[in-house]
Image (cartoon, rainbow, N blue to C red; front, top):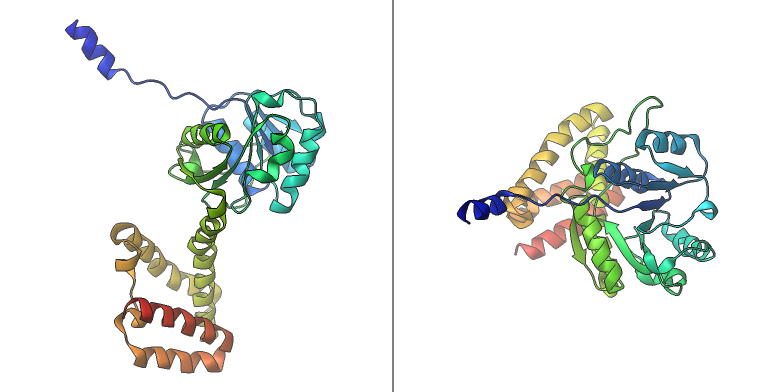
Length: 297
């Protein structure tokens, strides 16, 4: 009895591979998901694109089935993930609803950060479980070598390990999407539909605005004669250290600079210089500095 008990304590259950999947739309998000699901062991992956050569190359590299349009889609008992522009999701939903498929056995997800599950109402009316499933991550353009594999991180779920997935919609779809998130090593976050806008705004602030801030920093250095390459070499080490500080200390304690110190004299000098070289940036700098001064008063 005792030895059997020890054996059951040390055996770990195997992680179940993702179920059959269809991905519609092979932009950066769709390509990244296709690669991640392949590495996670998904069997029966179908990719639907627009007939572009690069899409077929990706499908061959991943040993996936490729369709040039969604009208050729046949029965699938797992997931359909719609990875198209926000403005196209409702249209794709209506196109899918015209197909003869056992919808009650399907979970349909889209990857928009702003839109909720209701944009898939045409499919919900058919009996499908629907939800919004947005990865809180930025995606590079994925290159595919003709004779090789897609260039994504090699380990596990790649870009999705530790990534939060914002999920909202019907409960059965939310539960299924949560399991799918975990299959990629991600972390599901259940959202109320009305909270998606602020959730997505947070993603823009933590990614797009960070890149925009570094773009401005490079522009300032270029204005005093540095090349873009040399400016980036100057900016990137301090930016990388700042992100490390945020990870270790939290964003509040990682804040530095004249606004945090209450150094109004330095801020005024910055503003005088900027008003001569870049009046628009001067207004941006003044607004951010006022915000920081108020928070740290």
